[in-house]
Length: 531
Image (cartoon, rainbow, N blue to C red; front, side, top):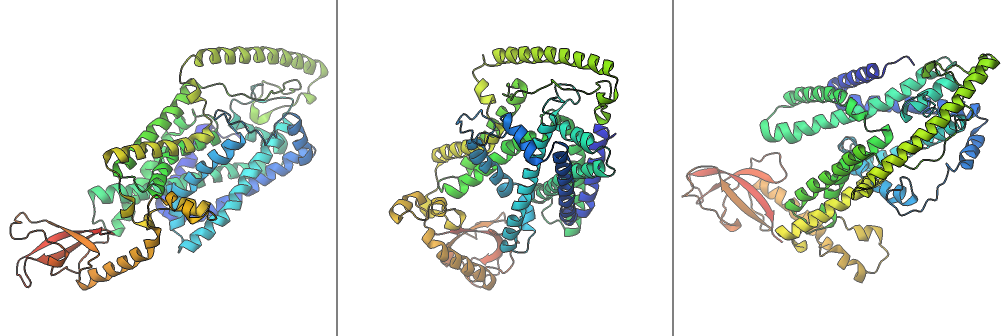
């Protein structure tokens, strides 16, 4: 295409940072809607033209099937198998739950909807759209194999990485069609921009709310918050551009992205799973589970990049390579236009190159395997990236439960049932009650309506100045002189002020030592549920 790698990186990074910084969430949503159309247009154009160049999609599938590249029933239980049925179903399930369930950018999109129902509809509409992108990518891969089945561009040194295969394929089959290469570039940039922009917007929102407002400037105005959010988005946008070099060392884009989702999103999903399903988990367990899972997954991920275990690959063919290696990959010249003598000489040279390259690759693989497998942790580094999220969730839950029991578990009977998920009731609603009851771990799901009515009563009481007997109120005085103002129980508090913070738990109010007392202290009320 003529674009340099770092020219593309810098231009995409700066453009994305600019419109995300000044446009915010609204700009991200509108540009994402436009960019998905560009992505579909580019992928469909590549698939249609590519399939036509190999004799149709059915012919391309036949070529892939003959070489064993359409095997969909690998039932190997080995977690080192990259794409077995178990890995794709179970490992993929945890990966996509982490992406759609706890990923900040996705949750932020859902929260931008007007209601829960609208968010659910948006998710269901998104699902076939995502499937379409994935299926188009797989079919383009099959078409590319059919086109290059007798000459692997990577081993023949036409390209240096697997991520360059699709651009090479586009230029080979559609380079002479005006507008199509540009459409494909727009497709690539749309995919990159939509991902980066939503990520930047989410990071800015999190840092503003959870760091700046929580620890530095609690009473920030909305105007100032908007300006601070823009600065944060701009700073992180520049950091993303700088970190592109690190990302380029992680291998293929898809594998790198899913690996990072597993290494970071997996532990986050783990603590949500710990809190929603296991009522005994406490704060210490959640912290320990999160940190332990993050450390373990980064150990595996970084170790894999260092060790680089050999990945079994199906055989590739170089017997019919007919490109002139002196040209660039973007303007490959076919030897059909070269004289027969030159072509014969080039093919002979190609065959010699193929033989030497095969020997070198085999020797290197055997040498690497012999060295790496001597280490006791080698098998750990062969774990398929599809299993990263599931492994992270299991690690977080196990560590979290152990630490929770060691530091004092929470009693299941004291847990608010609205904070728990009756997992087995949802998955196995047909089981009899005598089996489901112990699987609820002692959580009183039958008390949900009671808790909701109690909360409504409490909200009304805080407005009217009355006290709800369903709660204990712990009063912490902010004044230095506390001798005249002792801590009192619910029935000893005569007055609660109507002023309260915008917070779900903590409210500011007033109380007096005696009815009508002129001396009142500003207090902080913390509400605890009495079961």
